[in-house]
Length: 275
Image (cartoon, rainbow, N blue to C red; front, side):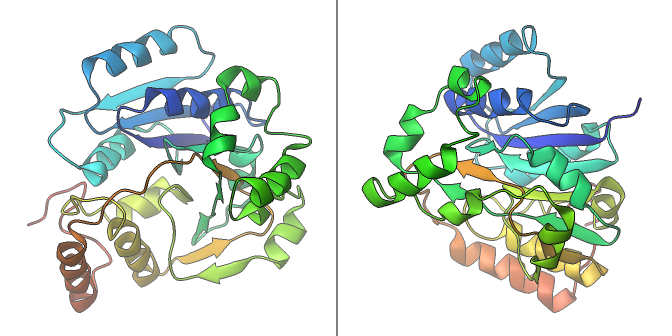
């Protein structure tokens, strides 16, 4: 039986977070998928820990790694796309724990000529520290977790808690959903053929937090795809951490302006190097 999805996790060194994400993937209602850890140069200790984990988990895991030469997220994502064995790709970040119906949601809400996009609950530091892999496997993020989020939003400042409301109803999810102009790289899915048609991610982006998500969303739309955000689905819980800097924001903005000026649908700087 062919795989329904490849889950591509953007990752670097934070093995404690990754363990939580993988525990949540073990808990998924949909089981027919592979996991690809898109590793942007983690150290040997982390690499060995991942190798040990793959021996004891029921998950089918590929660990796609390259040496640490700075922030090369888009490069390792492209390598992971090439390595993927499914025709449907779901992208998440290594600090975002998926709801148990996350993969099922992406698959049942997928539609031709659409990129399915979601958002995330931003957990407080206090609530993030309460979450363990064992708790996740025991259903900690299910049942009464929304009530816990509501309380924590008052006491400890968890944010965007409405993104944690889940309704398993395709008609409601689509009827109340909206079309958008942008996406978050931590929560979107697309057919592999569509992503290859735009040549994947632009590998010139070499700093976090600004640019690469905006740029690829622009090219998706130029290519003729719609970015659809369902309501009450695709739940994710973003673990608290200090925000990363935006040291190259101006440089990334110049790159994006080039994409818009040339009205790129297919980047020349992606999976296939055309410049």
